[in-house]
Length: 50
Image 1 (tube, rainbow, N blue to C red):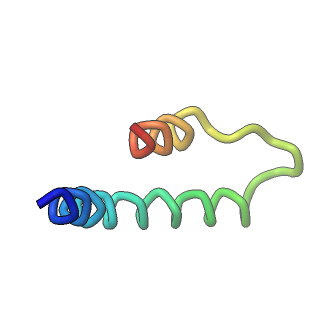
Image 2: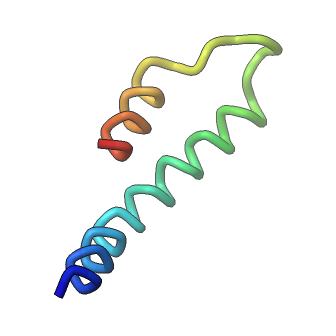
């Protein structure tokens, strides 16, 4: 029962996690050196961590 809840939670976050991951990768490729993480990208990561 507990394992099913954990798996369901992980699956629910899989797609948003992949989207945020792709955004981070795009930002890393295109950013100026030493530029801070954009606020919206940071907020998306924090939301997934909660």
